[in-house]
Length: 237
Image 1 (cartoon, rainbow, N blue to C red):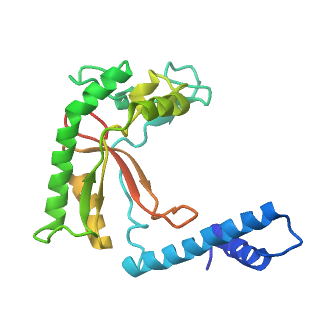
Image 2: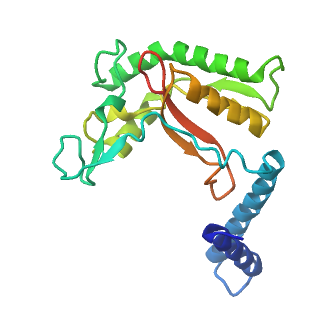
Image 3: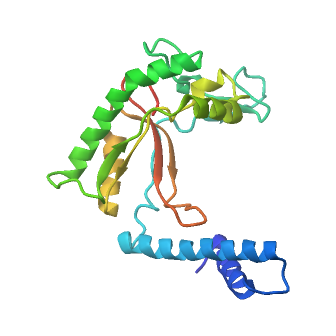
């Protein structure tokens, strides 16, 4: 049985395939339909590839439990100091903390000082995770850990202004969680689930936010698990 999204994509795929090349349509329309057809073709192939790796969709069905229970609450009366125009209250305990972990950061300089302090702690923790899950197997192209450099300041400022400029309590910079970042790749569903369980069971890691794109893949079928975690030292990565 198909759900609503599956039915929409099936109909869209049929229409795109039938109409591509129809000379009665404008060139712009034909180009759009061709692009749509290519996207949906990619989605079909990615769905099939995922099922090869995870036949029973165990990753998609895995419940990633956050320790924060979400970083926003709905105001009952809209009067709280942490509310914005949508009535949301953002929990102050999830503001990025300064390098001494004595209070929230107040500027981009504070944020990057905290991030530089946290970077080695984060890399050590994630490297240990990888080693514990990988075991004695050698790292391969399908199983690896990668650490990115700190997010560029220009892009970070743009994101803070665009996404968090109206969020209270401020400043906007204290809600940036991706200055310190990295990725872990495993070749099987079992290994990935072990990774998630490792994170959930580590008392020094606090899972702040989680997005499971194995449940809701992108239009092209891209899937991943995006976690934002607070590590020792209180920085969120």
